[in-house]
Length: 112
Image (cartoon, rainbow, N blue to C red):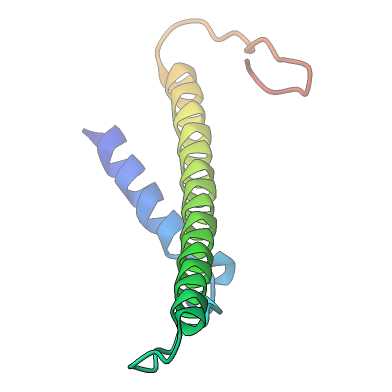
C-alpha cells in the first residue's frame, strides 16, 4: 500500500515540473488552400487539388512530429518511474531484517 502511495506521489512530482515543460503549444505552419468557385479552367481545378494535397501532407507531417514528441516524453516518464522503482526496491532490501550485503555494481557503479 505504501509503495503505491509513493509511486503516485512520484508521478505527481514529476508532472508538476513546469521548468522542464513546453511553454507554448506548437501549431502547424501549413497554408490552407483557398478556393475560388467557380473554377475557370481545368488548370485552376488541378492547381487547387495540388494545394489540397500539399496541405494534407503538411498537416500529416506536423501530426507525426507531435506524435514522436509524445513518445519521447512517455519514454522519459517511463525511465524516471523505473529509476524510482529501482531505488525503492533497493531501499526496501536494505530495510528488511537480516544481514546486509553491498549490492553488486555494474560497469558504471549502479546495481544491475
